[in-house]
Image (cartoon, rainbow, N blue to C red; front, side):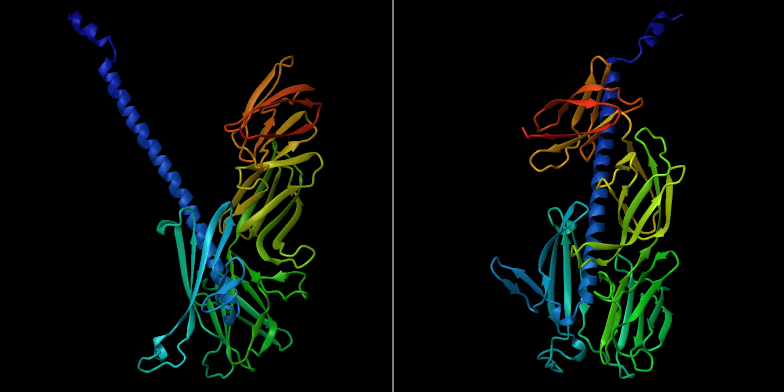
Length: 467
């Protein structure tokens, strides 16, 4: 028997083998974390680009809906408005915040001389070269480089179009929120005063073009009601202008002017189902909670008593069922604000967390499942809210320690993105007594204090001072 061979086999890894293993592990780990970081950056940039695209298309659709003579730019030089060529009511530069991301929006408008009827000084010579206006909208974020800028273009023609009918044209465009036309949309045009009741469908580009003649579509100032619908989509309807409507509608009744192009654009998108579940911080369902939810499609804005307040298509006061669930089927995309009116519970936050504590975002065509975490105000507990004393902004990642030596309670928790930390982190509830509480956060001075618990929820607001 070879005793030397047996001795070698029992030694395990040699030092060189261990070093090689550690080197390979370090290479693999580094590659993994680099890939993770790159993936995270790509996701964030994709979200920023989608937001910029949506904002650019929204701005373009707004411009298309205003009077042709008002399409032009202006900027404030510190003492007076300076107008572009053409002059108009559009701001050249704006900063718009969407879901905490700030975008720089630049609008440029110029006249265009179309070669179809000749050009100025050309053959043939076009004595009226301002055939239409060309619009460019650029939306930038971050450093605003070429890879962080979205640009959209559009041409807008003045009112007036040649037609053998001798009346004019009503052009209806149905788009999704990305600005793409939707085919097969059912559009109903009604004017009860002239007995017009026409139902038709959009073509492949999302358009319906109708001759506006006394016999088919008689002229009228905001006399036509437009109803838009399609299976799987959240539809739309026009409203009379304020004050006939209690608010200033975005989609007003349609006007038809003889001898002119009468364009109207309505945006719709795929509908979504919303599933809301109510539970406590420990994962147990909280049944039969009275809730209030408002949001989704924006119909317009209020004129009084607070001008500019959004008016939403969705506003529901309902209760969750015995399992803590409530479903809203076929609703619109957009932001929804959630609250509860139950006296025993307090709304804490959503799980998963949203950008805003009490607002959730619904994506068109995607089911939204969200859990509302509720705090029972009738059990011994502490909700610590940690903020920056300078501007009252929440401090995320702060370390909050709640302890009581005699009660043998000592728990440390980190604040979430809203600056919140909740105790207890697991049942049972906190026993009655005066607890010590300490808070520390990078870049801020420490806090030491007490909080008294006596069989109910205690809100403890703590403002830290920058160090």
